[in-house]
Image (cartoon, rainbow, N blue to C red; front, side, top):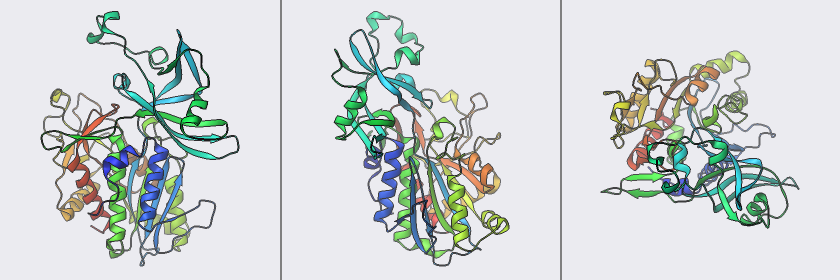
Length: 423
């Protein structure tokens, strides 16, 4: 498969959901896609189209033979990751230290946020209404308490998010506010009047291990899905595989998954449904019945990171239905439909993996450890489209730095490429 930017460079260039969405847009523009403005008449002419709304991005490719008898082949993912989100009024301080007031976004492993240099990244809006993408570089740090001051710290510590998670950024009397510092570091003229900024690790992704085949990086949940989905779509289009069938190819990378997806740009919002309905209508599928028939011919692969079996906590996993990093993406199954996979969509998964000649595994959580959930059940419930859940097996999920086998990310790109090409 032809790759655009490498996965490590993609991750490092996507410190926030807004950066990730913009990175996907730029990669697809390089592959010949055109930008769709939501306020303009909808474009469903043959070719690729991409739309960014804040931290979400949706792209669709319309083959020459697309018509009201087509379906949609959708790959869903999400662009956001856990961290500390800057509060509206971020200036704080204690005992002579300058601090940034933050609140917890999503469910991070709190201990992983300590003693590492953090950047602030996201979007800001200045007084003139201009929107800017911002990445400050190393600015903040949440320091641990020395073991001399808490001899029991290695026996466990319960963090108070209000008292213990305000990062420091300086000492002494402030010469400027936190937002003035952000504007200076980002070379922005004008006053910042609104912002969506989150902390993220400054360390670049690293390949390690005996064969340098393991990847340690921030935000593998879920850029380990966004990158291969983007690569698969771009490659299918470049190689002509997208025109080998008449289904419309869709990539939907939502925001706010880590806080439940209930947002305008989240999977529970209308953004994907709007794109599908406007595309269907532009192709001549007008009316509820015509769109419902297109949905009935459609499918969705929800791609979100899975849990690899942990070597030091193997008892937290099912003894049989547990994936190992390096042996391929995992089909995610749950009896309570926390994942959307059922027998019908599992058969689709195995067919696509077979067409790609790709190894794959299965993940079912142990009965004593409940699993999380994904955009899959939300998409399936909202649209009624056959959906499965899959993901690259990783360790340290929701830590500031997670780890995966790099070849699993490549394998997911190959599988999604086969799906987009008609398997």
